[in-house]
Image (tube, rainbow over all chains, first blue to last red; front, side, top):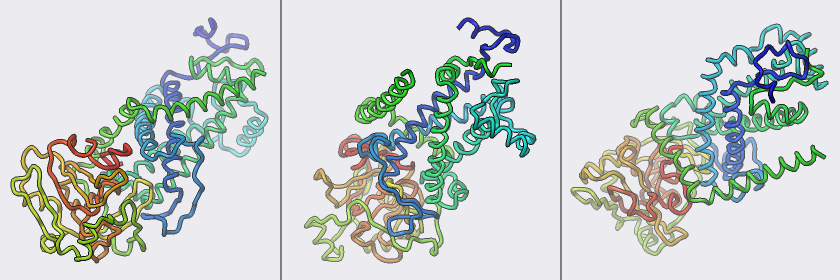
Length: 247
Length: 250
């Protein structure tokens, strides 16, 4: 622990050494999100259970064509585990505020502390086929870190994190807002961008499924990369560089 | 060994979280914390869009080919049966409570008032939507005729359908929605008198809120200063019985 607080240049130390990897805003948002996403997924599936059919367009009910009809999600996947649309809505609408305003605060903080510009920027040359192929091979071989700069995110991490922060979460929030009749009156463009309320509900569900997929992959990679080190770094900010990956 | 222990910990942790959510869902103090989001949404929505923001109105070709019913599909009481058999000739809508001039209006009188027709989307709390055309006098006109007293804050709708717990259905809205131009007492749907399934002879349309606010079989309108004396005090049947939001704009 003592070396963790050492502000000396990381490269000067022999591996294993620690680098300050996650700023306070990132760590706070991460754990707030871990809780919010857990609650939003469970309560959202319960809300879906009240009418487990999805449509495209402005309207959609039992006599209209559903593009997807699913059996109800089981109790272990829903909040609460017993059938209660009203309780699920109470959870969902409370944590929706935390999720949405949390994202807004995180975006402002990460622009101000240059986390986005420094750590999440994807350069055109990163996407060159040769580079992409090399990164993919390294990733599949579970070599996640650039030996020259082990704390930097690899390309696939950048794509995943940027996709969640700038695409999926905003899409979930906007499509969720479009389900609210009060918001639709306040901001009529909300249903326009999704081509109707029932389309927005379908987009909301698809974006939810992609977030769930991200969570599964994220947790699997945390386990592969060393759960103790990664979780500790998301608590304290300091990440111990694995010996074989140090410079 | 450590991995298995860790995995068990994760499973126990996740199971504990789910069980915790069940316990919290039933706990009154947790319910009041979660419920604190409802007024936040109400204030945010009305601030972002203004109190007079209009719900979208659609073209006739955008209407649902079939508009399903939900909730009470027939009050089924002898009193309602008698009114229905007489084609609602003996039916009266009363307007009372905190008003200067209580009213008792027949269906022909409601039909003779200035009308508003609107093709709007009906959003059920369950998730489905249907688009239909509704027609009737604006609630604000009735309240003008009756003369709301200054103390009136909410408008309560007492209905003819008896619910599972023996009480009649009731709902309420505040004056922001009561005086909104799209808030009407609809006696016609898709160009015909309301069917029994859709709330004949008259139902409320409050277009910026979810379906359960659109009280069917309305028989009495009451202006009140507070919702505490109505039913269980939360302003509506589903609010009192099941904890649904009173502000159902979300």
